[in-house]
Image (cartoon, rainbow, N blue to C red; front, side, top):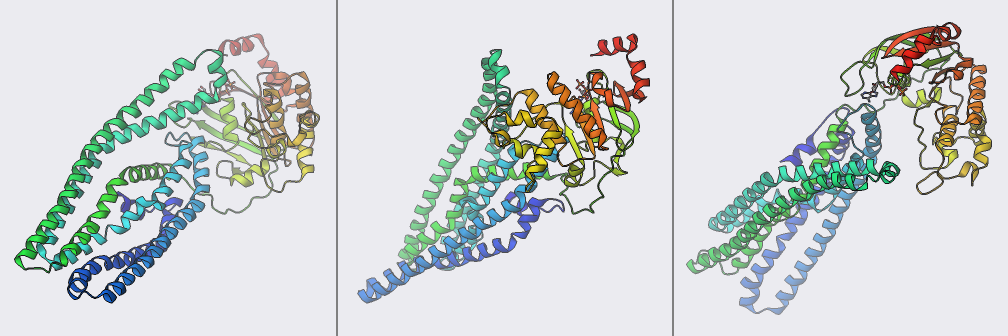
Length: 576
Ligand code: ATP
């Protein structure tokens, strides 16, 4: 069965399977508790046997009292054991979550930046579904299943005919459960996929709610969303109708088996094969033997959702490599070499960069210019180690930027992407890159270096202005300037700014120029992507990219002289 396959899965780099394996001792304890609880359950058939066999015939009230208290005490113990079994399983789920959730978060980022289509923010919800399956009543059934044959053997010992009827009952119930699974699984799968698509569609629409509202796109988008919704509803309804039909057959069969067992028992009593007292013991034991299948059918949906969530998590962890402790590299000086880089974006078909090859020395500033779609932002991402070149490599102080430990690399670099997003938290937290224990003075130094200190002080709560949901909303220019402060936080040695002046007014541009001068004066290597050559005033070298190739590269004045020739300008204008 799938659940056993899933519990025994093993992949060396997979934190999920590893944490399940580490939880085997807890599962073993839960198994032993289940065993004791099931053994104690035998007290009930024994009790009825004693009532009919001993109390009724002898009329002894003291015997009745003693065995009644005895069986009540046994059930109390069994209740305590069941409680601890649940506790062990809940604890197993909590520990697994603690060990895995951090990795899910990292794998999510890895997967998204590498364009893995299987990755959605759904992954964190998947971990919840999987944990709920392991810690909820669904999983408890799995522990009860091995007890079915034991109850059946006891019935067989009482009389093989009773055992056979119960076995037949169980086999038919299992067949019906499997049939239900076979019929409904594909439908539920389609319903689930459509539901996931509708969630991500809604997420994207909500993120762009202003565009949607401004251009009256609510209705058409609602129509598109309704298509996904309809598939979910149709498939779920079909699956539920079929499941309900099959489960009604199962119910009829279960009730029929109970009647058959009484009938067979009565027949055996009449024939004198078994004692009258065993009739009720038979009923109780048979009901208990079939109970796990009953519960299995009831929790099938939860089980399916949990296993599907597990499959998606496994897919996400497929090529995930957890960060390993690495030897810390010395602080970078800022020597950058881009060595014969070709690049096809994740999921792309064609080369976006080809034969890109250049060097920048520590403290130099490189300006990158070129028409839209030339590959400037792509090159910036590659220099930041976000993506890995398809061929060639990019090295900072000789070390590959892609394989460099991310935290260590982050301390050496600053990056301002084209669309600056800030995170829910205060402005201080954002500038401090959410690093714990950062000194206020360092945050303020970064803000001053980015020329944004005064702007922040004018905000309602200054550095403590909260940018969380429904809190203060910054303009695009303000975001970009605070993003610049985040990029220069912690005195990085290598800074990449992708169109840092895209949303700036003239005051912002002046502040940016001063920041570039200050960074250059302190020996930071700078790469600036821009459509506006005035930003390259302090640049040492210029790279002109066109259609992913280096059209020009060299000292600023030489390149700019050629670049600003009318023909080149026209060509670039036409391509934009
Ligand atoms: P702009 O000046 O408009 O910002 P750019 O020079 O920065 O343009 P890039 O964003 O680097 O251009 O894009 C270069 C090419 O790579 C474009 O043709 C784009 O469609 C393609 N591209 C970028 N990212 C991806 C991706 N994730 N998957 C597929 N293609 C991509």
